[in-house]
Length: 97
Image (cartoon, rainbow, N blue to C red):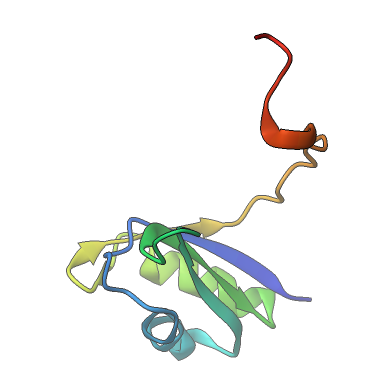
């Protein structure tokens, strides 16, 4: 079963491929994604790495949490599932005004 990891405190220069390369040494990475701002395309400083095997993900957490990547000590832990959010109102504004 696949396991997704959260990777925080990334350098603004870290790209998807660099993230993948840093984590491939622990096993098969099925996905590696640096999250970017929609408008500017600039990194938001965090990303996700998904492994095909749980054992590989656990080894990566133990080794990479606190390790240096592109000049920054990164934070690595198991990703939490995103909670369901209620649908937004039309127009994105509330009725308080």
